[in-house]
Image 1 (tube, rainbow, N blue to C red):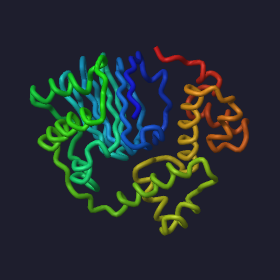
Image 2: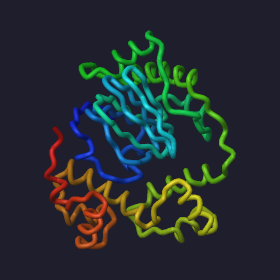
Image 3: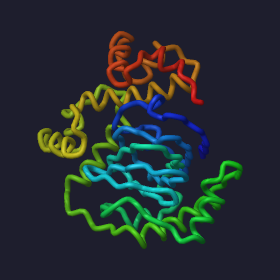
Image 4: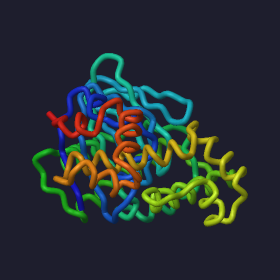
Length: 277
């Protein structure tokens, strides 16, 4: 289980502008907490759930095409594989918790293949105090059972405030399958042709399903996953840039440098020199 508590000022300086976050989509009992100052994050999605708690100020959350303002003392919940982004107009301090569904499987089964009517929710004082002590606590050593308990308490508050309705769109289910396939195989030579054969759907139907959620060329989307994976290796390993390029699915260092700069606005070498404050 991975637990992080990081203070990041002006988070957009360290973020990669991309849609699918590989790191926040794999692993059992994955748990991560990051504290952001003046929270800003481009549109993205991932398989794991996301909870935010606004400690100070306010932040705007975009789900699909809808914006909601989440103010001090309020929370927001982002379901699996939901396109979302954040911005702060003035100032904010926000705790962001990303966790895998296996912490709260009963809740996962309750909302599976359902869509929420909003993302913002409030907690009773008792539950909020409990969450601030057990979850959003930089000095506390977290363990699986304590996390299960507090996450189920928060899940109860979510179900009181947010209405989930069954999705009637077959494309929602297919989109989840497509993301799963891509997340596993993005380092291979894949395309809409290979995906359609693997999933058993016609290529043009698969393409339409994809573009309903992600307004991006499929091959460019694959490259954003590769860059996301490469950025993690650049920041957290001693591998050479050439080794990282090949490990991330790029066939040449030249192509890797070009695509990485297109996605992040920085060369791999420039990106790896950034340190988290």
